[in-house]
Image 1 (cartoon, rainbow, N blue to C red):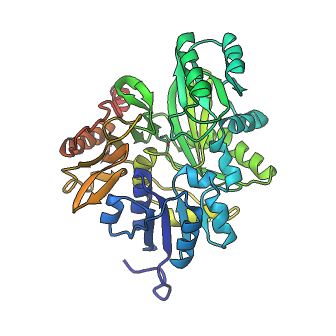
Image 2: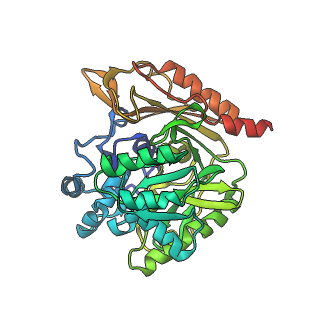
Length: 435
Ligand code: GLY
């Protein structure tokens, strides 16, 4: 394909992060008609196999990332994970006049502090569950005395999805309080005690340019470790997109309810929001309620959403970085379904297993099945496990049944010692179609 303007050198884009989300971002950027040069830091073995140079730098190492972006003459830095965003990477890049996709540290606080997110929602009337913020064991015990069960306890820190504890009764709540305030599992933190909400979860991500929220295709993710939503919370064990019953008009209505008021308020407070604002929603019998906001693309939602995007991601990310830059932008989507299954390593989410050789990765990537790496590394010419979530397998098809079948057919070919996965990803989507 010819470049839009052959006299210009290709744009250079640095993707920061090492997960399946970042591999999905890299693939989507490589599909841009602008044919950018894409780099990653630190990337993973799959990103390297896509011939994308991987710089051995951690996202949290703000100084080194800024130096690399300057030295590599990057036109755009796309920050995947929350920790560098909350740690001020976008601010540090802005000081060097390097364009970055993602919110400032002040705006990213919406994910960094669950108590701050709740205060924002309350200030602008976004529907959410009732809550109380407690700062120690005694306050927590007092608040719990007046609560109904189940109840949700959230550590007021970044915890990679693992800081949310759902307690079914007083005994579980006391054990959670002990773990949070006595054993200090997440360090010195306040805790948000929150009403447990029932319904179907929905992940609605919106591209934001400081002024306007442009909703993306809806997705559903699976946060619990085991089938039937059992076991501990994880970063996410699978996802699918689209979601039946949430068409583009409905997504617009939801974005006006839960994204736009937050954007307006953050702008009013002098901390305009650029990047992706991810609303984790519970669709309750009383209507939608926000469970949480994240300041970044979801993982593994992105692995199911971005391959369905038919618009130029690079153009959209650049426009999001400019105040009001998304004016007039629209998003085009494939009508196919995408179902993503995560393969995790032994012990995840409590621990992970590294160095186990992975087989079967080679011949699966095709038009209807995509393999995206997460915790992988190359050792002596072999791909091995290098983290909790290891590989994502996405099936694409005109129906959720077929997309699911393709994803699980791909899963069967990939093996490593201690491999764990959920077998019920998107089963619900299939059931609903049949109903
Ligand atoms: N899938 C949940 C998250 O990205 O936080």
